[in-house]
Image (cartoon, rainbow, N blue to C red; front, side):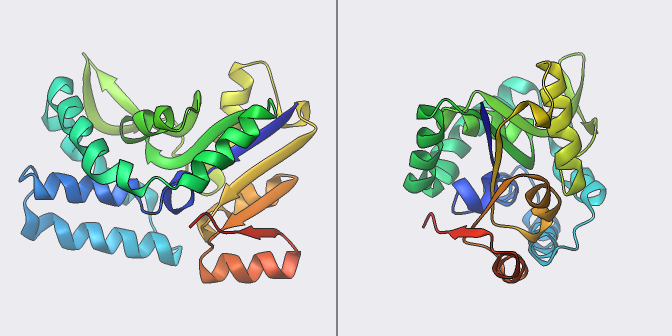
Length: 220
């Protein structure tokens, strides 16, 4: 069996779901625009530059989840899916996932974006398995803190290993390991797999891919 792993933001999507979620809350008046918009843009810039402090970002991004009941968050998320996410789903990304599923590969979306934001998106792509940054829950409410290892940079390898272990598998269980990503932040996992594929890559990742002879594709 082969394993196919897909980054989400700017890979299967033509945008960043983390960034769009915060923008959605700002537009809904849930977050104060003057306080949050510049911070959100700053974190997004740091992510693209490869300088993001994931713990600082999670403190910013998860805090609003602790202020509202799950029912209200789910209501907002449904609107977020309709207005922000569905318009940026890449048709070629949907077909890429379908092709791996048709070939009976074990498929998972692997993303630093938290599970609350991304679980409905993974379902939209028809992907059963999601490996993402977990959220701490207490008495049915999000606490605003992450749970476990953030699924970011080297943490993606750790999180995938933990997910596979839950199924009684290891990386060596597979005849081939695919990973699709656009970002320099995913170099650790791209270097780990047997079939790294870069998708509409940033400048740093493009340079690395060319030097190493990795496959480069576009899903635009």
